[in-house]
Amino acid sequence: MPSPIEEDRPLVMGVLNVTPDSFSDGGEWFQSERAIMRAHEMIAEGADVVDVGGESTRPGADPVPADEEIRRVIPVIEALAGQVRLSIDTTKPVVAEAAVGAGATLINDVSAALWPVAARCGAGWVAMHRSGTPKSMQRDPHYDDVVAEVTALLVDRAGQAAAAGVEEVWIDPGIGFGKTVEHNLALLGSVSDMVATGYPVLVGTSRKGFLGQVARSADGSVAPVAERLPASLATATWAMQEGARMVRVHDVSATVQAALLVGRPGTVPAPRSNGCSGRPEAGE
Image 1 (cartoon, helix red, strand yellow):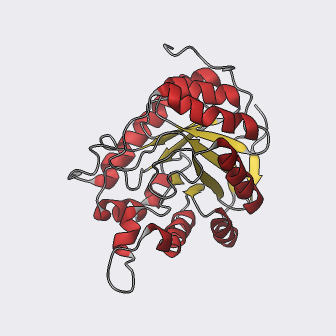
Image 2: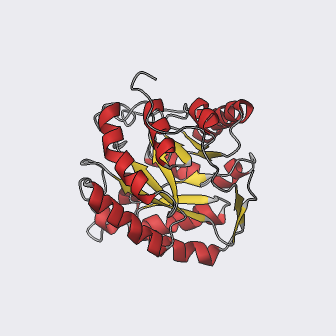
């Protein structure tokens, strides 16, 4: 195992949506050439990880067939491999395996179910909490104790992954995924409790809808996506100060500045060579 990477600030993961329908930038980076150009911009801005996704997970989004998701993400990953650490944002085993084979070393898993792929391929794995599916997750989400329930599920999944041999396991409370505004704020207020579990914590609040509801425009209306940078920075900075080791964001340069000011040291494993090469058959 290579020596860990020493960082003098929390890590910043840049969002790269190779989709036509993501909530923030749907269609802007859908063409491979534009997605690769945007990745190079994020690298220049200081991104530690570029998170490539080929299926929108916004509320109400339609599922994408695995072969189409692979068609979207693999050329981008292949073009960027070796230039920056790459993660694949997917819930499908076949897509995760193809992406690791193309050069991704981290699986960012909204379903918190792909640890067997991470173990088999020698990749890192992020377990994110989501209640329901994109079609259903914002239909009256309910928890008796959102912090306790989210934390318990993530610790359980992380433990299964570690037992299966995954050496780099992250947990993510899944802000905005099957949660009300109150749920999201409660989870943000409890980041330090998740840090106390011993697993490195990843938090993603960037441009999300609850920020538009809390940090409203001057006229009192819900702030549109384009006006959510201040709230995105505020919540990312809060999470980093509370011990989150990585934040997932659209606005890389501004967040790297905030991370440098927070300056909390972190240690994460270096990317490893993977055990999956080439694209698996669709039925695998």
